[in-house]
Image (cartoon, rainbow, N blue to C red; front, side, top):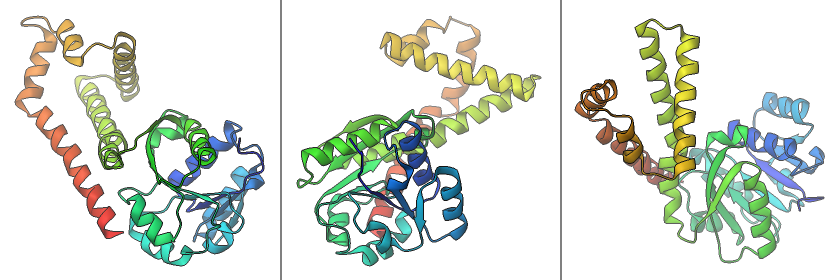
Length: 273
């Protein structure tokens, strides 16, 4: 569906590069020359050209000329400057897809003076095609543009559309920042295994398979996590002893507070932009 459409990336950093990689590796975009990336770092432009065969530029305005889809992949802290530069410069019939955390559709429409805007929040797992992306759109996005959005996001993993944009801030806190929380838990489990006497390789392999298996079991059974937890918790047993320490340490409260802190910061960044 994206054949012969010019796709412009404003920002070719970590997340932008991941999306480019997925679009090309899944043949969602068959011709790499249909992608142009604007990035202020010449070294990054050179890397993207050599690695993916895309076109690059240091000029945002040049990148969006003639584009059918413009993907905003910049940090919230620099978005205001980028929007001021691009205001009124994006082709009127183009679709703008933003992956900028915390920035509302209204702010994007006003800042760019552009009507057709989709706001998304993918997470880092898009790198391996297992990303989770929640998205919402402005009222002027056409059915064809909506389809283009789905095609792009499905190349990254699971996509979930919502009419209530408010959910995107929540998705940022739970799904995007949440990957960082999961990695910290994994790191702690591995360190505990090493402390017990396992090699780091052994501890990592056991931890990853334990978590992957637990997730797969939940997908397969659709049972509440408390039900599954009770199945492995015998009275006075090993799991019960460990769970007692987790509860005593306030694990539930700490995780909840971490997600809420991430939500608060997402909203702050949106206001800054």
